[in-house]
Length: 141
Image 1 (cartoon, one colour):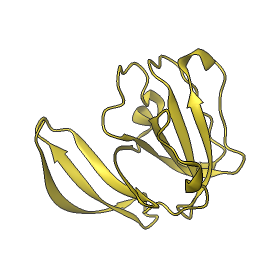
Image 2: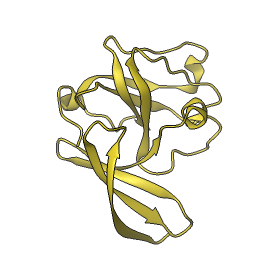
Image 3: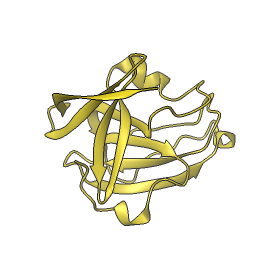
């Protein structure tokens, strides 16, 4: 798929988390975020319907990951219902700082629900093995 860059002034959920949005040849979009020295092109979901669906039923993650922009800052629960691959979950607070990472969740963990120890405003799901321990405490830009 051919990608082209279109600069879009995007602020995620009014938090000051700004990013560039890339548009794919088939209408797919991803938003580039930066964590420490790593740039990731992520699909951003913010509607209740898309948050509930998440990555369930997909055979691959798509972009580099999926960033959930939650409507409130809470200890949101995530599970692996209808998942077909393992993921890392990166928990991000309302100040855009990574507070913790849950590593290598497999589809076999369903129906267990996973929650951060501290409230999160954003939740980033990445392919298992992508998240780095050094990201804890890092700002997401």
